[in-house]
Length: 253
Image (tube, rainbow, N blue to C red; front, side, top):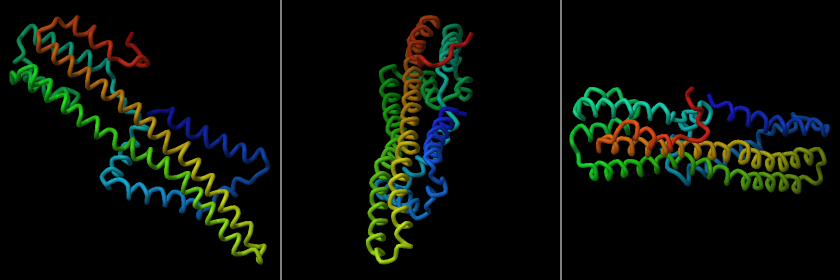
């Protein structure tokens, strides 16, 4: 579980609601279903219009990465590759045939299969780099979707505000309706800004960070497999791959 995602959202909303209460405002006054429909409904409508439905599905599915983590442990893959390299050095590359299905990562499985099948290193590298490009593009889809949502919501908040003010102008002769119209106008603006800056843009940034980590691990795996195929010593391979491990990743003691 990624506690930072939960803590950040709770802290952000808590600060806003606390400030509202400290100023003597009612938290209930911020609950405006009309404003929520305008901002969130309009934003998702714009998102669906801009992206294929598959992109929206991928974006929603990626939220588990935002809240549950999912960052790949580079150190674990380093140790796994080192085990394969040591076995290959001792028993030959063909001895890795039995280890392919047990590999933790599909990308690593495919690379090992090519090595065991005797694919030329340059051909292997070209194929796997193409695979990396495909994974890079697929991982950017959820990021771009939530970035787009973060751009839509402030504008839709302004639209909600304008609609609220139109209602106010149409009911100037009925003071009882003025307060409701003004409330919708201002709350819609708040909803748009909050949704963008506390939800959608942070989700996009978190996914971008996770995606960068994942692609770094994939690049590390490819270099490790190529080094193993070239017959490099496992210790040399280990030192080379450690350079890929994220600086913030805790080291094993």
